[in-house]
Length: 188
Image (cartoon, rainbow, N blue to C red; front, side):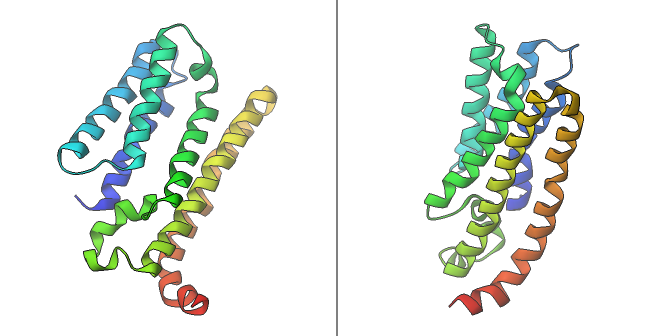
């Protein structure tokens, strides 16, 4: 599968979690267990055929910890899962900036010849995109926390969280085409 499909697959446990966390007809084990199961299956598959990314590994550990603490009686992740989940995503994305290959590069590299994987323009393009997304997840965590502190405006803060994705997507589409031909040349 193309790398970008794997990135989309890495979000499936999160999407299931976001879709079920406020569904009161589902039990807590299902709300945490299904994303954990999906995260473990994805991690296991990727481990069997290579090396899982930070996203896949972090997702598995997050849902394992959240599920364990929830089963042990903590309501923290069911109440503040939106905040903590966004912080974890931000950390997973930003943390890869310290690696030789930023998170987006780990997925998109499969579209390119391996000789380009260490190219500074390829790495810097992906580092900037990864940093933007890490920043978006951090802003989403702040908006989610604001929704908890101002329950009367919780819906508006939820809209803000989701609307933050629009400029990030637009930026990603534009930047990955612009930077390698324009921005990198002006920085060298």
